[in-house]
Length: 511
Image (cartoon, rainbow, N blue to C red; front, side, top):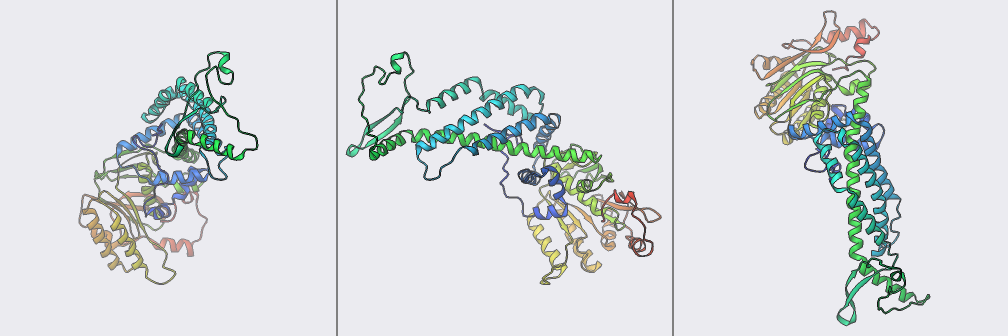
């Protein structure tokens, strides 16, 4: 049996190794807040959410498949939680069956496996009943296939036959086996045999009116009892392995069902948290890799929304056909916040879930990377510029055409002329190689030199500033200015201290 709710053609693997830049993405995009909201305090759900968010889907078709499954989960949350709880109960029940303190023998393996199968049979019956009751309420291809599979495989005949086989494996009429004499008079070709059906009361008597020979082992004959046990073990060996494999197969099914539904339940948790904050979400429209498509309405930083009490200001951006988005403007005007919102939206789009915006469409990328400024090396083994160059060198080794790079004040650790020259060369090389870049900078030399090229593939956004110095935390399409109004911050901090307004407190974080 296959779950196939995360992918149409393969299982979800929560143990796969994530990309090397996952820690940087988690830190720079503040993904911890999103994962905490998804997990709701459960460690297992946290890891599932982390892997699901970072295991990006490669095609629009895969994304839409998962979006449709998630839409079903949003429409039928109670049924999905019942399915999840059933999978958890089945897994926990199996753990209650005693294991092997010492070396396992075929007969002990068979005994335990039969007990586990009896427990699983009850869980599968409840699963089949749940599916039959609610299958018509689901619309997605993923759930339709899942419920059809259950209806096809978990039939009344299947359950009847399973119960009959498990009853036979109790060996209430003894263990019937056959063997041949091999070299040296040793037994070979051991086979476990099924008893003939009981036809009359005479068949219930010892011997069943069939000619046979028998022997009795004395009560204190330990060697004889051990030899008989070895004969039984030889006979049940193949059967024990088959039953154990069947139990493992069903266990694997319930584990996959739990993992895949945990991801969707995490999405429901996050959606509920954002809705409680009054923030909108949407199902983004994915485009093929290389289409250079990114347009959003009301795009906001989801991690910031979770942290603040009020609503977070969203931004509109129309960057279809743009290979580079360069962001300039006032200090603490919302540039870094916007950059995080772009990264979060791209990850969520390619995870096949909703995005933090009123509307969003974007191209699938081959990989998402961040290059943010870092604190100076405490060991003093290298300078900040060397550290930035090392990280950029690693990114160039990993990133491929179709990738997306988010840069936040990259190369500001050196003088503006040198930093601008380094950034220009990197931007030119990557954009020509089919890589999209969103670049936040205070370096006017860099921004002005790019703006002067009048390249149609470049979009310039600038953080807004009112005439009185108030930051709106919105970005608008505008040319770069030779100032980022740092004097506003100096005056507010040292000359005109005043209480933070509600608008600023709910609009964005510094950046």
